[in-house]
Length: 307
Image (cartoon, rainbow, N blue to C red):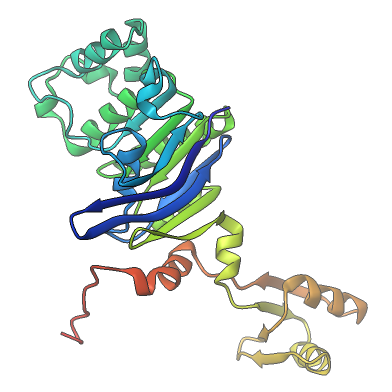
């Protein structure tokens, strides 16, 4: 099992502090979503983890040691930071073959990951002819080449078509189920909600949240439930007596503030009141994220009306 341990990590570029005393741990066996506004420090943190930049202070350890200290780093860590990194004059297969040879990997791994990424049919085409989505698949194939314990992907769904988005979603889940450590940076909140088990959220280089996805959403959700029954007036009277504020809509649906669905269901059952619909109100990941990061968004546009 291999974790990513970030401890008091700081990175300064002149007077600007891109990463500010950052500490968190990415555990194996789950997909960790790495979120934050533009300029929050996500890409910088990933570059520091891969030894592409030196920290001003602090450490990033992969499996207990710096990335560069691993004898065969591609076998331990696979990463996609820039889908444009492959040389345009090379074919997709030659690009991966060069990586394989340089890292002591068998040539058969090239064919394996080309097939896995869905680009085996275009393996002999030059990279410069590839669309963004095809380059993205090639970058993911390169990340998987060494069959690594740790996978870091920066915006892996960027440029992918719907089939590709479903593929990357399932791939991330499969990697986590195999016990690997998976860290995925993304701005697509609705998509992140489909695959992430845990969230690490940054704002202006600092840690804003580090907790499981359900806990993150619950922390930004109002305690409220919605219920429909065969006798809404009776239900409203029952819940009002229990001290809850109940709003009754024209369609008979009740909104109950300060209560959870389980509590309402138990009270209705004890009173012999049939329930047709019962659900807790819960914000989306996008809503929870925007609430948390509202004060830490460095680049925010104004609406047309405000403009």
